[in-house]
Length: 127
Image (cartoon, rainbow, N blue to C red; front, top):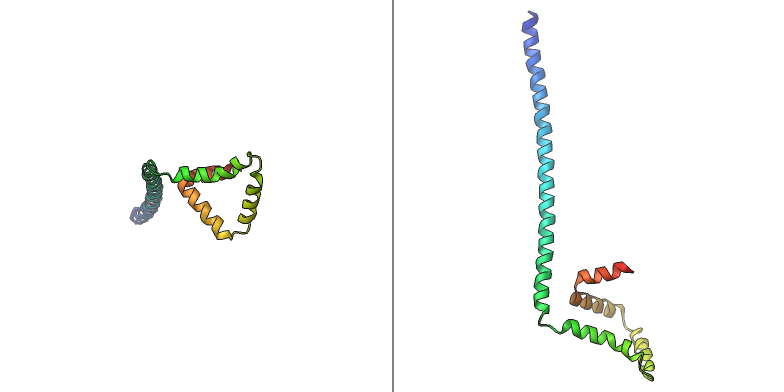
Protein backbone atom coordinates (compact mmCIF):
# COMPACT_ATOMS: atom_id res chain seq x y z
CA UNK A 1 0.00 0.00 0.00
CA UNK A 2 2.83 2.38 0.85
CA UNK A 3 4.44 1.57 -2.47
CA UNK A 4 1.17 2.36 -4.30
CA UNK A 5 1.12 5.79 -2.62
CA UNK A 6 4.82 6.60 -3.13
CA UNK A 7 4.77 5.80 -6.87
CA UNK A 8 2.27 8.54 -7.89
CA UNK A 9 3.85 11.06 -5.48
CA UNK A 10 7.29 10.33 -6.96
CA UNK A 11 5.88 10.74 -10.48
CA UNK A 12 4.25 14.03 -9.50
CA UNK A 13 7.48 15.32 -7.92
CA UNK A 14 9.47 14.16 -10.97
CA UNK A 15 7.07 15.94 -13.32
CA UNK A 16 7.28 19.11 -11.24
CA UNK A 17 11.11 19.02 -11.25
CA UNK A 18 11.16 18.33 -15.00
CA UNK A 19 8.81 21.28 -15.59
CA UNK A 20 11.04 23.55 -13.50
CA UNK A 21 14.13 22.39 -15.41
CA UNK A 22 12.36 22.95 -18.76
CA UNK A 23 11.34 26.45 -17.68
CA UNK A 24 14.92 27.31 -16.63
CA UNK A 25 16.25 25.95 -19.93
CA UNK A 26 13.71 28.03 -21.86
CA UNK A 27 14.71 31.18 -19.93
CA UNK A 28 18.38 30.50 -20.59
CA UNK A 29 17.65 29.97 -24.30
CA UNK A 30 15.70 33.24 -24.42
CA UNK A 31 18.56 35.17 -22.79
CA UNK A 32 21.05 33.62 -25.21
CA UNK A 33 18.86 34.53 -28.18
CA UNK A 34 18.49 38.11 -26.92
CA UNK A 35 22.27 38.42 -26.44
CA UNK A 36 22.90 37.09 -29.96
CA UNK A 37 20.37 39.53 -31.42
CA UNK A 38 21.95 42.48 -29.59
CA UNK A 39 25.41 41.43 -30.79
CA UNK A 40 24.14 41.18 -34.37
CA UNK A 41 22.59 44.66 -34.16
CA UNK A 42 25.84 46.15 -32.85
CA UNK A 43 27.85 44.39 -35.55
CA UNK A 44 25.43 45.59 -38.22
CA UNK A 45 25.63 49.15 -36.90
CA UNK A 46 29.45 49.13 -36.90
CA UNK A 47 29.53 47.64 -40.40
CA UNK A 48 27.14 50.30 -41.66
CA UNK A 49 29.24 53.10 -40.17
CA UNK A 50 32.43 51.64 -41.65
CA UNK A 51 30.77 51.27 -45.08
CA UNK A 52 29.48 54.84 -44.96
CA UNK A 53 32.89 56.20 -44.00
CA UNK A 54 34.54 54.22 -46.81
CA UNK A 55 32.06 55.60 -49.35
CA UNK A 56 32.57 59.15 -48.07
CA UNK A 57 36.36 58.74 -48.23
CA UNK A 58 36.12 57.51 -51.83
CA UNK A 59 33.97 60.53 -52.74
CA UNK A 60 36.31 62.95 -51.02
CA UNK A 61 39.26 61.89 -53.16
CA UNK A 62 38.09 64.09 -56.02
CA UNK A 63 36.56 66.86 -53.91
CA UNK A 64 38.02 70.24 -52.97
CA UNK A 65 35.49 70.78 -50.21
CA UNK A 66 37.88 69.89 -47.37
CA UNK A 67 40.69 72.01 -48.79
CA UNK A 68 38.29 74.92 -49.29
CA UNK A 69 37.28 74.86 -45.62
CA UNK A 70 40.93 74.70 -44.54
CA UNK A 71 41.79 77.74 -46.70
CA UNK A 72 38.78 79.76 -45.48
CA UNK A 73 39.43 78.91 -41.83
CA UNK A 74 43.14 79.77 -42.24
CA UNK A 75 42.60 83.28 -43.63
CA UNK A 76 42.09 85.01 -40.25
CA UNK A 77 45.05 83.09 -38.82
CA UNK A 78 47.31 84.25 -41.64
CA UNK A 79 46.02 87.85 -41.60
CA UNK A 80 46.85 88.15 -37.89
CA UNK A 81 50.56 87.92 -38.81
CA UNK A 82 50.44 90.56 -41.56
CA UNK A 83 51.09 94.08 -40.22
CA UNK A 84 48.08 96.31 -40.82
CA UNK A 85 45.69 93.41 -41.50
CA UNK A 86 44.82 92.81 -37.85
CA UNK A 87 42.02 95.36 -38.09
CA UNK A 88 40.36 93.38 -40.87
CA UNK A 89 40.36 90.31 -38.65
CA UNK A 90 38.96 92.28 -35.68
CA UNK A 91 36.20 93.85 -37.81
CA UNK A 92 35.42 90.52 -39.42
CA UNK A 93 34.97 88.76 -36.09
CA UNK A 94 32.96 91.72 -34.76
CA UNK A 95 30.60 91.31 -37.70
CA UNK A 96 30.44 87.53 -37.22
CA UNK A 97 29.50 88.01 -33.56
CA UNK A 98 26.23 89.53 -34.82
CA UNK A 99 25.35 86.44 -36.87
CA UNK A 100 22.42 84.30 -35.68
CA UNK A 101 23.04 81.02 -33.88
CA UNK A 102 21.58 78.95 -36.74
CA UNK A 103 24.40 80.23 -38.98
CA UNK A 104 27.08 78.87 -36.65
CA UNK A 105 25.22 75.58 -36.17
CA UNK A 106 24.93 75.19 -39.95
CA UNK A 107 28.60 76.05 -40.43
CA UNK A 108 29.62 73.57 -37.74
CA UNK A 109 27.54 70.82 -39.34
CA UNK A 110 29.03 71.56 -42.77
CA UNK A 111 32.58 71.48 -41.45
CA UNK A 112 31.93 68.31 -39.42
CA UNK A 113 30.45 66.61 -42.46
CA UNK A 114 33.42 67.68 -44.57
CA UNK A 115 36.10 66.45 -42.20
CA UNK A 116 34.10 63.54 -40.88
CA UNK A 117 31.89 63.33 -37.85
CA UNK A 118 34.34 61.06 -36.03
CA UNK A 119 37.11 63.57 -36.57
CA UNK A 120 34.98 66.34 -35.10
CA UNK A 121 33.98 64.17 -32.15
CA UNK A 122 37.62 63.37 -31.45
CA UNK A 123 38.51 67.05 -31.62
CA UNK A 124 35.79 68.13 -29.19
CA UNK A 125 36.54 65.28 -26.76
CA UNK A 126 40.09 66.65 -26.32
CA UNK A 127 38.76 69.93 -24.90
